[in-house]
Length: 321
Image (cartoon, rainbow, N blue to C red; front, side, top):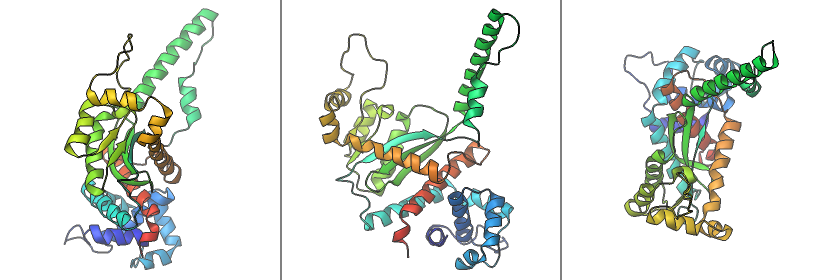
């Protein structure tokens, strides 16, 4: 809470309005929300936790405990995209001072991952997709099973379209998040390449980015190499492969197919560092949870961005005094 409160004081103003009650400042409420993400609590749960720990409230200058409704309203203010982006900017500056980002030597890794929109049992999802077979003859039961399986697949497809998605640009040396983009649905990743690389490029001295074939696109290579001077390493695996096994279209995509053909080429190009972003996805889901508590797409995106800030605070804990 102390580190989150210090970050909030540098980014947020004290009060959202001059007509507010001024019982708690926005940095104090931001620290409570970071504690909520860290402990994987609800608003009522973090309120009860703070009531049991009055010394935590006193450490950041709070005379009382904020109500769960106060925390819910503060979330819509402190977790806005403009505020979280300023926090990521400041965290990148701290990381560069501690030499946790080495752009010329270590690449930036890109990847996307889906989160659960609510807490749900994997066994329950599996049972929903399984057959519900009815009685009667063998043939009728088989047709019922096929119909139930189709219905389960359609229901799962609708669920995937509504799932929150988090795309990350991660420093492979320290697992620090340099750029993040929160969207809804399991769409293609190549559309997120330009904003992720641009944000990481302006926050750190990025010289190389690596990503999987989901980011593969000839325009993406040109944007990174010609506009930003960043070396892009992505396997040319997008699209349907041709029957005659012709090389992929585009100069950079053909070059990637030759460069990443062997294990030695992947190691020398730095593509093997792409797995660091998979580690970050696992860290976020294990430490902060894979299911979101918000109920709207906008607040789910805000919750994902707040988790990115919390993840960076956990890594940069030794840099704040």
